[in-house]
Image (cartoon, one colour):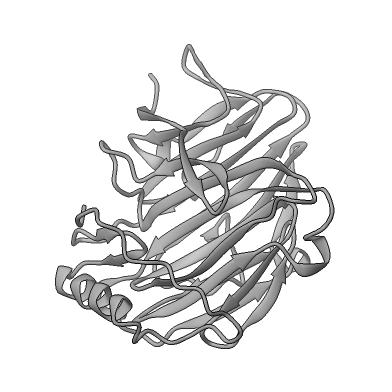
Length: 293
């Protein structure tokens, strides 16, 4: 019997000046464990006149995880961080009560052809930590636990699973796992998972029961402990999930909280420009109109 309860198709969205595939949230599934937002950026071929430029924008109540497959992004934030993220490394920014950051093509790449491809993810904070002080952590690619088993490559990008722990400092029980294989293999990892689980197919295909699933789909399991599938040759998938929170979390723009009053305060603070500033940045993104979801 298939363990797939929901299939989410990747949908186009706009970020900066190129399109991304938006994966979460979705009308029928607002979160998977603590994961509330996933964007698949690219792959985008940018010429010498095209650059990624996401001006300073605010966040509350979440941690952001940026993981690149190709390309480079310069991260700047209101803590004074200025750091380039490259493929395989992890940028983990915890907004807590409020942070502002920008994401741009590094200066040395702005006048040349380049690629940009990766995932941007939001993880909601537990209710009791939503107003914590903001912080930032960068983990280089060689600091991420990686291993091979039965010809399949695994990488634990964040959280805990398989008796291993990523150095990325998460705030609730979760996991974000990369699985790659050059050969067709059967994968049975349910015993190592917990809570809610989703699977995103980046490359190749997977088979569950009699169904074959292709790239740009997220599959949500009915029971993470029964996570078993066949992966085709030259495939790469990402497993994400964890323990869901007991209370609902609301999203408005870049704000996430279990308390709508905190979102309303953040809206007012951003409109009044009382959020902390990003050193060296002067742009301001106006508050959008949509309502809290």
